[in-house]
Structures are given as C-alpha cells and as structure tokens.
Image (cartoon, rainbow, N blue to C red; front, side, top):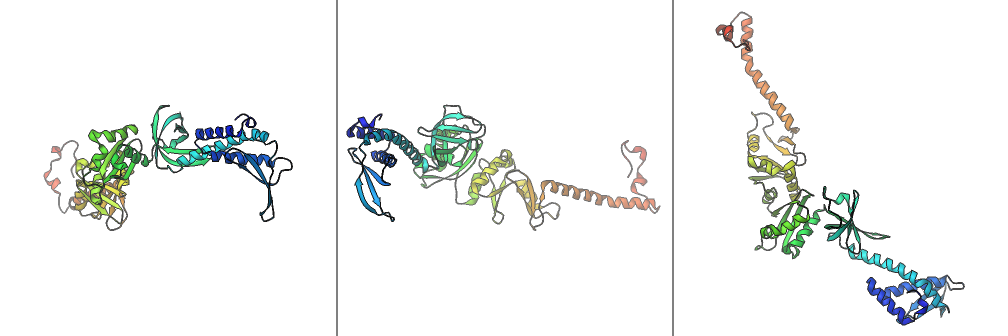
Length: 420
C-alpha cells in the first residue's frame, strides 16, 4: 500500500483482506492497528482534543471522534473531529503502523503456537552448529539446542534433519525462543509414541525411563490390554520399531523391560539382560539386595556400573548386587569374627563395596576388610608359633631340649633353611 490517499475505500479493504490472509490473521486485527495509528497521528496535530478515538467501518470509512470528559472520566460531549486532510495522514501512518503491528502479531502467533507444546517433539533442519549451541529451523521459527542439551560426541551434519524435545518456550522482544533437548528422557517417550501406535492410543504405557544419553537407555512398559505384549509392541516385527528409535538416537542402546507392580519381579527384570536369583528389600535403608549367579555378576553390574545405575533409576531403589558366593560367605561369616553379621553394600556410582555390620557399628571398606582379615591370619600364625617358642625358652634354660635340636642334623638342612 504505497499511497493510501490514492486508493478508494474498497481497494483498501481488499488490500487489508489479502494481507490478513497472507499473514494468517484477521482483518479486524489490522483495522484495529490502523485505528490506533491514526489516533496517535491525530493527537499529534495542533489543536487536537486530548481525548479521541477512531472508528473504521466495513467500507473503510474513517471517522475521528473527539471527546470532552470531566475529572472522573465521564464523557460530557462528543463530536466528529475528522481532519480534512485525513488522506495524507493515512498515507503517512498506515504503512508504518501496519508493518509494526504485523510484526507484533506474528511474534504473538508464533509464541502461542509453541507456548503449550513443552514436552512435544519437533523436527528441524540444522542451520548452525558450533561449540555453544545448534540452531534448528522449524519452519516459521528457529529452535535453540544448547550444548548442555546435546548428546556427547553427537555432531549431526548441517542441513540434516533432527528430532528434538521441547523443554521450554520463552517470550522475547524478538519473538519466541524455543529451547530443545536431545538428552531429555522425554525424547525417548515421544519417539516411541511416534513409532508404536499402541502407545499413542494409550493401550501401552511407558511407565519409567532411565537414560545415559549416547550410551544406553532402559524403559519399563505396561499394557492395559492383557492380550497385548507391551515389550513385543515396542520392539515390533523383527525389531523394526525399536530400530527406528535407535537410528534416530544415533545407535544408542535401548533395553525394554516389562513393568510390574511386584517389586521383586520389577527389580529383577530391570537388571536385564542379567538373570537374577533373588531380590531382598531393606525398606529402612531403601536398598534392594540382588543375588545373581557368579557368572552373571559382571553382566548385572554392567560396564563401569552402568546397568546397575540405570536399573536403580528405573525402579527408584538403590540396588546392591552380590554373587551367590558372596552371599554364602556373608551368611557363614569369617571365622566367627565380629563382622560375621552384616551385609556388603555396593555403590552403584563408583562400584566400591562397603561392609555394613548388622549391630550398627561403623562400616568398613573392602580394603579395610582385607587388612582386618590379614591381621587376623597373622595373629593365628603367631598363636600357632607360641608352643614352639616356649620349648625354645625351656631349652635355653637347660631344662629340656627342643625336638629340633634333638633330632635334626644341621648338615642335612637345605642351604636356605635355618633351624627353629
């Protein structure tokens, strides 16, 4: 609209309608913006009334109404004060006002479009990728993928498509700022919802999720229909469904286990692929003691304790994994010593084992336990040597001779041996 004064009312309305359709807004919004702009332009004129408003009808006929009000804001009188050179005023202000209002409305519409979508998944094209953040083009807006929300060592190529999880939508002066994540556990949930119709329909539920981004994920699934296997539904025919999720996550391993209200069964399944013999719960400490066959111990703990950590996050219990041999030794105790009653507790983060005595005394580490055992063994050996030492003392007093002196010929001893 280069010169509003040269356009008749019908042409102006047609132009506004076309603009409204192009920008995805209503004509009323544009008319309101024009009216506000004309009102501001009118009040800048010499002799203009302090109180005034502008009306624009369906035929784009413009009328400026001036008002006289009292101290309480009541309108005393109102009159038509439309300037004779209104066309020039329109020509000067309409373009500027419309452009400004259109930008504001577009920002608000973009924000409203994404404001309620926290927790959704979006697909964008990578536009910029550096050490601080990655920009994703979502079409009408851009999304920000901070470095802290990126999977370590994941470096997608520019112009490639990437799915991300919306964690926050911020309203700024330049428009909405959408923050997305590739590490949030919710990304797993939404990816499975895309690939598994049973989840999107609500037949299968993803009850819990534990994730170490870029490495491994465990999810627990539940079926509301006894005729549908939740694990099989998520895996798909020949693993087709879970494979799509793994490909989107650039090869991240995914363990799918059935959720169970039976905590013993749930904890045992959470340690999959390891086989569990027994689960014992210590509610006061919040610890689940898991017994596995000796050859399954390393598999249950996982590389650097990863399997145990993920299982603990999935179930909400601190998991202490022990082999059958360890359990047998603990139940038997060590030579009737003071630590016979207690339990070994394994730190799932560091893998360090600590012996916690049942009597409530101070816990000791595995290293301290080994030192105590060594000291006990040395004490036993010293005790065994006491009778021989007593015999040597009697021999030195001339009261008796030791068996070694009486029956051993020094010439028959090996070169590196000495007589007691």
